Image 1 (cartoon, helix red, strand yellow):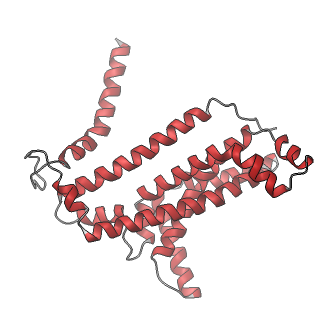
Image 2 (tube, one colour):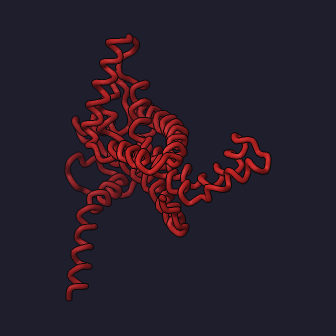
Image 3 (tube, one colour):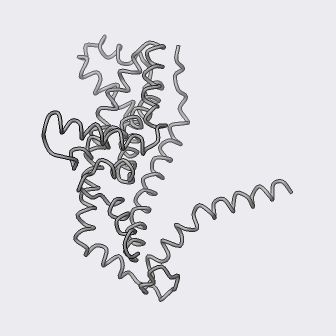
Length: 269
């Protein structure tokens, strides 16, 4: 009886979480402009066609992809370097740095967004330059993506035999070449996972982008501005495309993490 009730409870929880998304996906193929009414008028792809004919949506999509790609690449490079530095520290400094790294992840996004907005506005007043826009979005997205990259790369560094790098140097390999030949291939799965995670978080972010975007629009901000007016079925199509893209990336991340769990981590001394 307990097992059956547990399954029913789990089913209801998942139904509550995913039923609205399922309804959104289904009505993105609805032929009727129903507005706020739930009326099925037949299967159609016309809202997807209108979606990709909308100049403002395409501009928001371009901004979103540009910010996501640039911030993911930069945060991956910086996060990998930071993970290598943290991994080489002694136990107490490492714990301190890990606490500092974890803090932005547990901090509410609205606090992070407001703090970054105040920082950027103060920097513009002190040093001059442009107001909030693409530059502030790049900086904000790199900031909140960085901890996720660090936490993706660190486990691979702990799994690696620390003597491999020294052995390569003993055999005559220069330090930089030893890093690219020995260390980089060992931690590459963590780097790829961190890159995908940073891209996913960047493309999906709304709260921080809302406070640091100025007049620049990303897809989440554009969707929010559309919902404040008349609800258009284009929102359903746009949300479905974003949901599908993020879901594919999350599946890839989970598959890679599942493979990484098969390899035991090196314990801290």
